[in-house]
Image 1 (cartoon, rainbow, N blue to C red):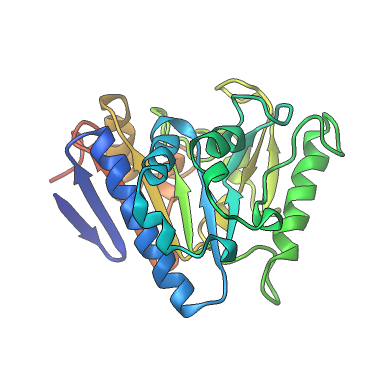
Image 2 (tube, rainbow, N blue to C red):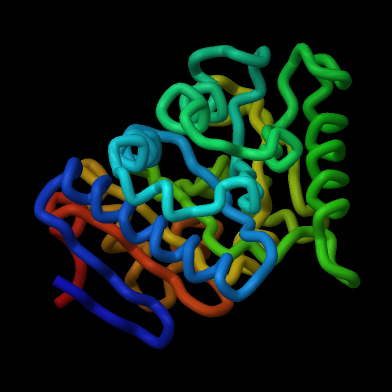
Length: 255
């Protein structure tokens, strides 16, 4: 099943495992195409069950060798502000699922700071450090790369990255990266990209599966939904927006 609205496409797969495999194959093809046009590619990773499942599917895909991974910069859309190597961190899960297998350039892996990093438990300073890293790799006149693909998971409440419904971060228009406190989902302290940076990505892909995501997906894709109420409604790229769902997650979409 495929739906389109302006530059938005909705692709529905039979179930979560097939969704993860299809998204992995799609990502390889996209990266190969980007690297044929540009010297480097900038990819933003996401966590969550289906996000990490997609990375695990990519690890099992021989076609991943078609990508020159030394020219790919990896970023994260958000992170749990925990010690480095903590199993709950998105970057730890990504390394375990896929990154350890790839011939990456270490300097191109831009993990968000941890509580045992140079800023210690100061989440604001850690977010500023990540914003500085984004700016360092940005083109002239910008404070962040124009990401070629920015992957996002979505929670049952419609949150993306660590932008939660009606939480202060959804109204942030200044920095590229922010500290998030009192998160409704543990742990309470996080770092997140802001809507401004997410919406400046060339392509944004929202990957969601399961019946518990169906209501949020339906609301996010309905016309006129406020991104401060359902943050996933603000997930869109400058060139393309893909919603990659399974049948259960797409159950409440409008015809």
